[in-house]
Length: 640
Image (cartoon, rainbow, N blue to C red; front, side):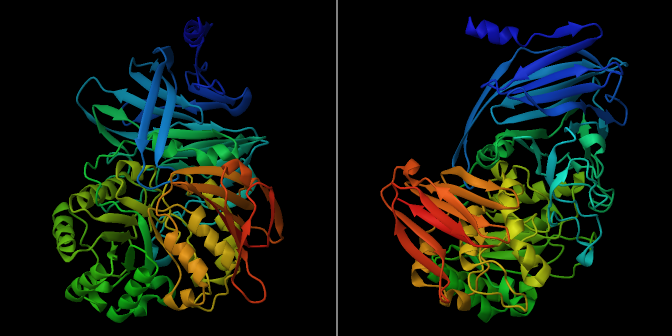
């Protein structure tokens, strides 16, 4: 009887000329209703526990030859199917992800008799949908527009990052997803950038949170964003600037005969839902890399963040290899112009030396053709399959473990194809990949696990450049677990524990910086500390960093609010690490219930006193702990 009731709840309900199809999450908390209005525009709405999350919003696509933006009829829908998936993530917020959703395909036909399917999958934490269009003839076509909107109540609030305008910024390298967030603003607030807003885009509707992103981009897709203007709180999907292309190549999605769009994903629930959800990888394509034995997550030393361009030289890299070895870190990153200042032959010597220290080398590359004016080398070596094969084979022969590739051209279809072609070729030569000056990876770390990290964030390098970014660091960092780092690895390059080696004054405490080593997720975490700085750090904290896990098994949201503060617990084997940071200008007091972890021992690391960077003490796991986090401060608790 229970099964029968469930099936009956999904019948198509006809009311005059308007038909409606419903689908709910397995736990019945999320409900989606799909219909067609009198103009033939496809509409959908979303409720969470009967509270409206999305008002009537639009769906549809247009190709160069077919229009599904209006004039549609709802034909019906397939029976509800259960989707069950279990998969391992080599690096991320948890090692094993479980995905269970109700799937239903809603079928439409436009006024010219062309058919469009929209596939919905609704899980307990997210609504996902994608478009499926099949042309009767074997023709090549372009998607010219997508009508998808997300219509929020005008009382809702938003936390959004402006999209950078193409060809702006240093050496015309934008867009690179590197702006500060506009926080807690009314929906409908116009973006300060004409290019719109990036994903993930965070919204609050009363007590319900929604995080919008996309996943499962293929070489024929472009990446999208939200348009700059959202009248009445209705946000529309936008396509890239025409300049965001590989010169002379494609901008918009292309298809031959059949078009299947990326998934549009709305994670829905509490802030705990946002922090603990794996929706962004649940909807990504499973790994296409059969041999992942070379994908070894870890940590890296990196000289450039402290000593910049002039010290990408042999002797400095020896120091940072030794630094990595001393800290039990697995990698050392050698940055721009290594080919000119060190050279391939001496780099082979460095790689051989690093191997004796159990350290692998990662090398920087300029991705660019002629789409920006960056002069750093190695340049133009990755632009074709043939050139990549030659360079990647050379690196493999040298014993290099991975590449950091910088300064991409944006989100056009040809650029997305370039990213994916690099990933496919790098896998053949067992090279790890780090994209910089790049787009949001949108679940690619599941499909291509050797994509260990991606920048796509206003990271620590900006803090070293100017006081304005240093002043905003604490607030900015409390945004990232709820947005940029919610699903995808993020190369923020965190954790400067002692002081910056520039004229900029860091405003966060050492404990704040240490906490980011747990809060931020990256397959390889490149740390912003120098050998000299680490010498000022107490040995017990150095030992903490040597023992810090390279991957995490599970995650729990403890407390927080975007832009104000965040406290997250991460588990590795039998240990839990709780990390918290305060993004505000005043101290904040929180309560921790350590007894819920059922462990016997807990070590608290906080701010030091009387000139000390840190303080450490044992705390009772059976009693609630009151922790006061100073302004721009932080803490870590290790429970075992």
